[in-house]
Image (cartoon, rainbow, N blue to C red; front, side, top):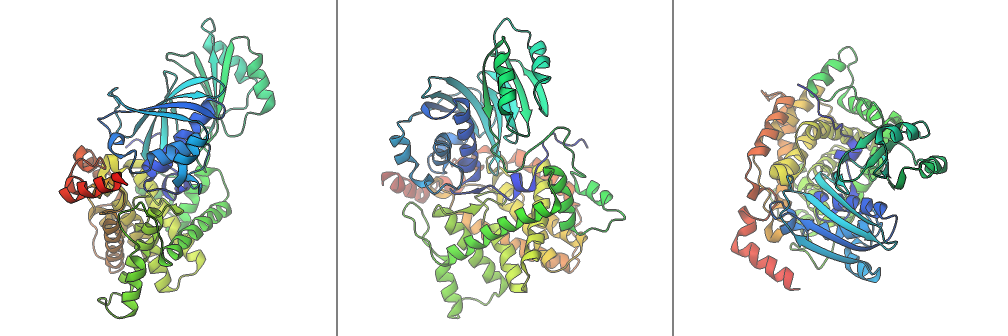
Length: 524
């Protein structure tokens, strides 16, 4: 089996982004695309024309699932967790930014395709096409009519050439002056060179570019991901099978294997990996505390419910559930923070941000696990997510809620077994069964909002993970190896009808009550 070209990072693809908004595929990914548009025009935008293909998901979801908020915030230069994002419309108007949204069929092949023409206040005009691939990850596929493939994890220097230039010769000339990871001639409507760098090219490089007589313009696109890429990037393994082979004679725990992977992927020390995990953990714990203290936000479907749940539990009015009730409370709290535009960690997505973090933290707190133990559990969850991101998808627009809450369940189950000091084999077994139990989950949000049935499915994912963790600890047989389960999961994703993949065109999304709620929200 050949390995995919994209090599996921735990902190790029799985435990992140840190963000506000209902959907990482829409809010955070759109924000990253918007910031790249800002780089293209070298600062403030005057006008943007956004085209969404009706065959995709964005025509029906861009207003209600946070695409507008994320994208326009990106146009303004904000990060995905900026506190001003909920009031983006006011700030966009104040900045004098004109935005036009068009629904045009232009043959988009991905459900999350953005086609954006931008004009800067300096008069520059550019066009970009990009896709949201799930969990806040993006790929830029075209710039100014020329195909490219950019993930946002490099400083990308784009050099525009005159029509008389020999592109290969200019590439070689500039290549002697620049420190870059890769350089290529991009062939399309525009004569374009692309240099990918791990650092800002600096003044000398800029001078070399400006000094070439065939260069008519250039742009620097800054990275939008926390973990950078580099030339000849390799990782010790990309599948469970090769991970187990790598571990022969080493007997590393699964969290230690995650350290090995992310250190190699990011080119950073293992200590740095642990500290990044610590920062992510603190944000997740903050979300639980914030949610349980009570949240309030006018523009949402569901009220604050986690506080009532905890009160009823204390009053003895709930069916005793011990850890299970703790899972429900924690998962609900995080989802309520998300729906009130608070800061959450999309792990692996915003739509499933409560499933793994909430259930993992509930189990950890019930077991009295210390901070280091929780970080180790997060790394376990992150590594399981890496295998899914490598060979399947986190995008509900591609794989339904199986891709989001199903993935969260598999990640959480392995993490829980780790918290209980289970073996590496038991952790993999738990992830396998939890994913098996999630095949075919639809994504059909009520009123086109990422609240219901999302809350219930996050709780379902947490309870699935909890059950599978205990089954694995009792050595229940999982039968199908995790690699094969992930491969099958990806096949199922391809078979789920488009209408049931976060397009608001099927399932609960089109019930009379859902449509009535949507009309009421739109009338406000």
